[in-house]
Picture 1: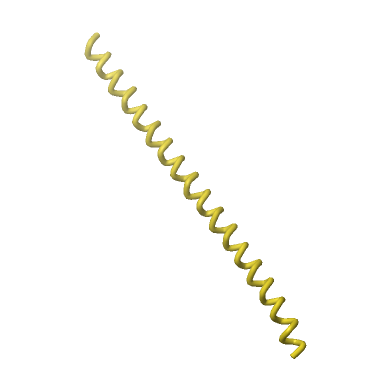
Picture 2 (picture 1 turned 90 degrees about the horizontal axis):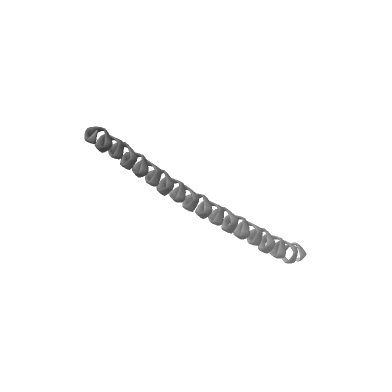
Length: 64
């Protein structure tokens, strides 16, 4: 009986710790996800700007 009363709070706190640990992992994963999305879009923008520069030089070369 006493063991049961002692084990319940221990289990409760253990589950709470697991819960918060999973929350932290979840938020950390979300942050990583959005960070990768931002990097992806930033690379796309760089890629497009390099393409624009490339074609601009092609047009200038043909003009002169």
